[in-house]
Image (tube, rainbow, N blue to C red):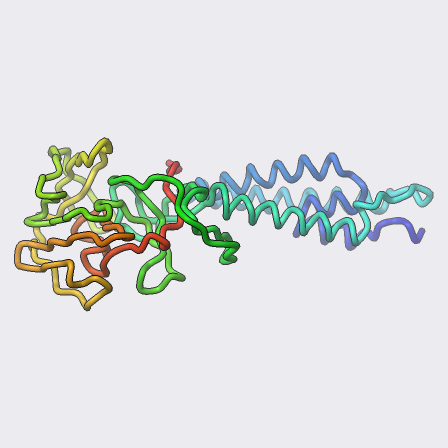
Length: 304
């Protein structure tokens, strides 16, 4: 009787950490299957929005209840003369939990990490609340779940037009998603709502006007091509081209502001970033350059 797992504890573990509940009652194959199911459900919850997301949450809760019941029944039916394997005892469960947490932390810090878009500054490319995956390796800023593991040099190339997750220069605890417009040494000009790089206007062609449903406002939409990347940008024809003079930021002397817009020379070790929603983006025009060590990762996939 002493050897038998406790039913109440199996049910509790099964509900809050389903794989551990199944390991506790000696069902490691079931625990592996439950882990795979949890990853699938978590991915669906991350990818979906609105009612689809709510449905996924209900499915997760139902799944947890089902595993809790299964673990409880396995515990009360556990044969008294059956030897419990090491992985089902407290030290085995603790070790499994630590290994699993370490794996998640390593994947999120060094491989890929999930993010959500906090604002509309990158519309139409990224809508507010949209989910996306960023590549973490090669960008030297290895952290996940608020835990920083290490910093290192950037080994991946950063090109004009890349969409990067960055640490906000004014507060590194905040993360922004922006498009890189200028590389070190570039002269970036944004005048009369047109973008210039080293004196050459970046080509763009008109598209169908974009309706922002939340504000019921139409924006002019263009397909902009910067180097080998094409992407849509929004321009509010009702907004003036003038950019309000911001507070001074590092290397502020590299920029000139006037009634037509702004002109900046990007210093070494820095980048110039802008949002695709050009008249509704808080970006390098207002807070300055992105230091190289503030790059977190690169957008690689957006969920529909």
